[in-house]
Image (tube, rainbow, N blue to C red):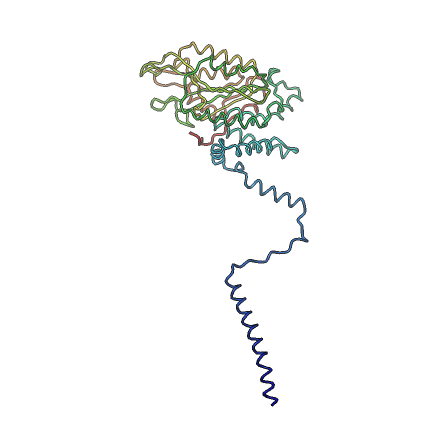
Length: 381
């Protein structure tokens, strides 16, 4: 009787244990079929210090900056591809404005190096006004130091205040407009009236600049010609206005060819003409900020050349630009060489002289006031 009672009581207990075991197994199988998620650590009571959190956020921001690239060729291509994108241009302007700031010697040195790099990149992209503006930021402190030690830089109107050439929102829209103009592929005819008219905008001026460009027949070599290619030399003039706008014009002296052999060693003389070289390729460039007096003298020289004949040996594109550079207080040495039936200044020899450092100021500006573009491969054709 006792055994029977125990058996009756034991059966319900076994049933309950069986049900619990089945439920536990099913739950384990279900859990095994779900994606595994590691438990998140409890950090509610372990906040990061403010400075560390700030640095982490800054690192995340700078890592995603498309203009923060150590490779010049890649960065140049990145800038070129993003010039037509409003958001990216704004990001670029903000990046450049940050480079203007610096409270310590180390910060200023680092920022100046970056600004010079961007000056070179913008020059290679033919965005000359922004290139020279970036370059100016790197020399202003040196010029201030020179003035404190009573070293005369040049004419009084050469002195440009750093605050008069800010990088701001207007550079954004001007950059876009200039990039659209540069899409033209060939140099077109122009004249003195068009060039002078470009600068007669009626706006007060705060600075002037000149760039001297050379396209060698063979890049990086003093070769005077390669087949029929003799290269080309041209200049760029820039006028910076008080309202943060600017006007710029790139042009050179050409022969007006009417016959096959014109402006060749066999027929070196031809009627001359001026052409717009805003989109012209180049290998080497030097430039500087110049006085109003120098700027006006160069325009007068341009007017004179509008009525001159071209001569391969005595009055060619390089001769015109060398005279303009001289009026800007920039001297370039060793510019002449010979060729069949001729001798004179030429792009091949002049470009090689620039590569070898054969240029200097003839006014009272420091040598550091000359901008020389680094010789990196131009990606924008």
